[in-house]
Image 1: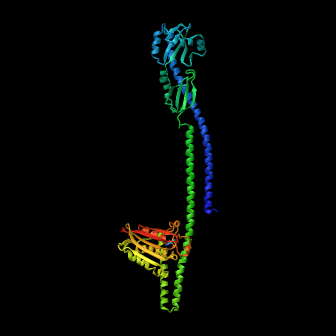
Image 2: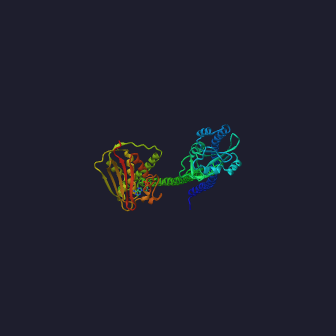
Image 3: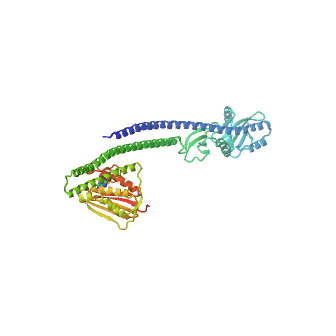
Length: 504
Ligand code: ADP
């Protein structure tokens, strides 16, 4: 069965994880749709851009050729023997490579003769059927493959003249394609492919970029195409994938933060409940601890008062019991008061150089009666070379007393106690060893916490408040030292209180 707080945490977790999962699912679906539509949009945009770029190339090319043909027409109309003027015109138009003018009878008007091999290429193009084709299609025609352009002009006498010329591929690349495409704003990778699919021009090296699409040019560059590429990593699909990864990662972090928060809150709640329980145990323990010595004192006091005890030895015994129980009460009340002062941050320590041996022996002395009565074998070993150590003697004495008190309290049949004082690497080490019950390893870290008692409030049937060791640790730390325990259940424990000797 889950505890109420665990149930609340589980519900809270569910209340957050379920909506988070729904958000994640919705996010995933919409990202997928977004991916598909962005791909479509991208292709459409690429197509528009390619069409526009192709248009621009055609326009630039046509404008350059038209300008030349217009000037040629003027020369043909005005000059009786235009050869020289045409030569000059050609010199100023590097795009036009081989120009032939053919008269209505198929006779070559310019230049005087066909260049080597050209007759075979050009003559069929300017033959009668080709002329008719030219007239049908308007004034211009470009032959696919060899890119020879034909134009219908008229001579001075009004005869139809066919002009045929070839474009210079270098000039076409440099002056037409470069001018038209180089200035495009779009960062897209575009290239011009010839009728055999070879790259004639590209804005940047294509490398391993993938072709998105290719659009054909119109009549100025028949069978040529303008292709759009996209570099790997820059595709919309990859951009969306990165978004998906980011979204998933962010969601993961969010869920992790929420889960950590819930777990932490749950732990805190558990600690709070545990603290509340320990506190109520503490009150019960202290009350019980106060009551027992008080009733002993009262009982012995009343017995003595009534004068019933006639034997002097017995009377002395009763007095000792009263004194011992009084001391125990004082120690208990001191512990509780000091503890509350420490909790309230009001505890102060008075540091004075203190001789160690009298402190150790004096503290042990207060336990002489219970030690003797319970038949403890006591060993004290104080190193002979101990210097005076700066400390609050009352506080350290109280810490030592708490350790000795515990050693007595938590001893079983084997009653032996060793108190040892020595210097180990510039620190005074006061250790108390017993052969008592011992402490399980998993509890050893907790016994120094306030109110903590091994095995709950009825710790092995012994009285206690659970603040003794918390106080010892506080006193040790206030002196710049520490306290530690080595213990084996059933064998015994050794508590060591360490205080630096160099602190003035
Ligand atoms: P308490 O008032 O219960 O003695 P302490 O803070 O002094 O409180 O000690 C905490 C717990 O540590 C004790 O309840 C006991 O279970 C355990 N403990 C302390 N000293 C010893 C010891 N010498 N041997 C065995 N257990 C010990």
